[in-house]
Image 1 (cartoon, rainbow, N blue to C red):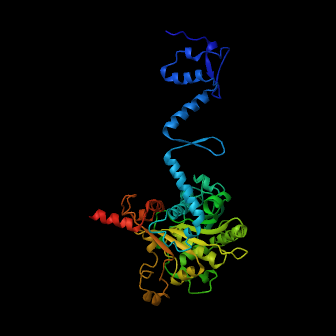
Image 2 (image 1 turned 90 degrees about the vertical axis):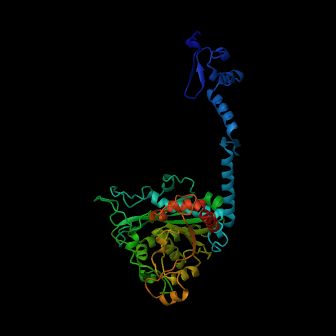
Length: 464
């Protein structure tokens, strides 16, 4: 049996992982009978005169990682970052996409109505559609739906910590303002209210936010400063469709400036956007007044920057998609997308599973103002088919001209990107209507979308 060394020869490890001991620090470690699994580390200590156990551990970890991946030296010498070959490919792909986005962001924002970018899907456009979709999804993730909570109907996170609280640390945006709307209008299946008698607000609901890209993101990733507006919709519940009055109303009736009284939108959307409650702290100003005020402020602050351009991007899912289209129209109609020097700022709308909003004249006015709209839809979703189930843009033009004065004659705006979750190899087929309307499911479809021809070929192959 090996003799136990005296306590003078015992080694201890301090809080810095350094080997310490008493008077005999010059012990010959090679003479100690370590178990076999520790002999590699022992020989390392005896070969080199390293006095730190952490240095040995680091070198052994280095040798292990050299067998598994590649060592990348950080440019500033701040340390070493270990990446596998797959990590490097992803990094390089992201870098290339960011470079392309900086060079082509106007096309990605719809300058040419996305000609040649949708089929097959341009990878940069796909990435941007997913990114803005995640900004709309953040409205759901942050919203307090719990009726047992005193804060039901508002955001669970503060404005300044919004993206960090959701784990979106690399979003590159800062929330400039939260948006609220009065819940007194007739959309009971959309608004959430607490059961408590004392709540944060009895007459308001949190509706979304206005954010602006920071300096680094604007310069290195986007190629411009971006004002992003995200509207909350409904996750999967479709009952709110039944609440719609389903008749069109001139926007001028709700004091939205427009030179053409024939421009009309669905009355429920218009009321939600323009109504206010002067007795409520959060809804004292309408959602319209809140958003126009903040956009005006941000355009005045960044519109004439010499080192970057500016864009306005509005996004939303479901009912939020309708508000995104309506607010983008309003921004352009009010000429808030013009800097002090007269520079025109592009306004783009990206919606997901959104309904029809207005009539044919509303669509034409959007086109006249230069607002670009892309609508991502699931072909099995009922929401994009409403309202205007019978009289809509799919009917003959002559019929629509005859019926355009009717209060239930609707037309979609912009370009449509149609997805089909039942023909996708990335999602399980489902007949559940709520699945077809789910935003996260749409983003998964987008992530794997190639082109209509690709999925049509898959369908033909599966039938053969």
